[in-house]
Image (cartoon, rainbow, N blue to C red):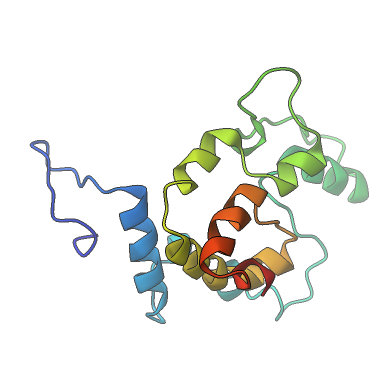
Length: 156
């Protein structure tokens, strides 16, 4: 990630801001051989090319695994596996499956609130097909930020 930042702390680890990382992701995705870690999912797994029987989301992993185990009659599978993506930071019992699948966690949202609207719009456009394929919503707080820059950005 040399192209992202020029600061190297004493221990030799790169220190970059979230804004610098998002800028790098946009630059990297212009390259056809970009880093697969933040590639668009539709490019990595060819979701539209194959006739998948099931597609699971990390946000609903436990519920999806339970459904899959039932559907495939897998009786010896522990469907109560806890995943970090299922943990919600907050009070109470946490959100429902639908809320987890459609909303960004409060612990994550604050990273986006200081990102310039034009960069957020580029990120949304870059991942728009994935948002559509996997039924993700753009959080209202982010829509408000980008609508000041480009009202049509979140309505592709």
